[in-house]
Image 1 (tube, one colour):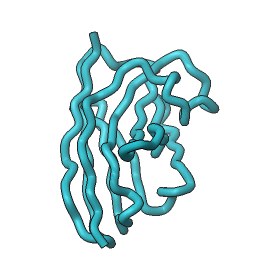
Image 2 (cartoon, one colour):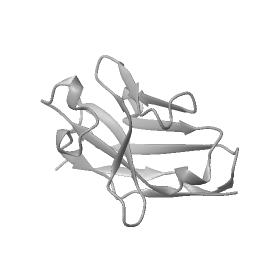
Image 3 (cartoon, helix red, strand yellow):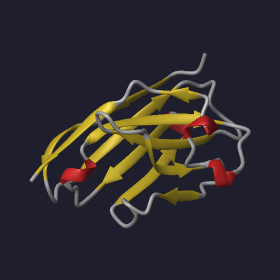
Image 4 (cartoon, one colour):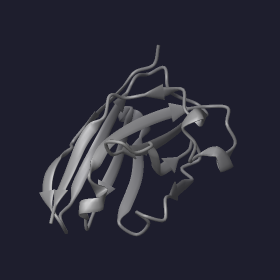
Length: 125
């Protein structure tokens, strides 16, 4: 069973930055697509960004220009650099991995087979 574990969350003021990390097990390789989602209390889990095995990346409009997704295959690590954070970015952030789904489904939770436990990001105004 593949495993993912997020870290790097915290509390920052608006305008600040955070770098989230996700360590994943060696089961995740090859054609896997990696993503970050976020969820606030009482809301659905929203897609943030995706990077596939060809290093093709995509971002939600709400974070485009402020967020960068990257990965280090040698370290089995996925990253999310968050800049110019806003209070609306406050959420639990989850990393996810999946294979077999087409690129256009990258923003859908069902495209991902494995999920981490999440790391909390809190942005104060």
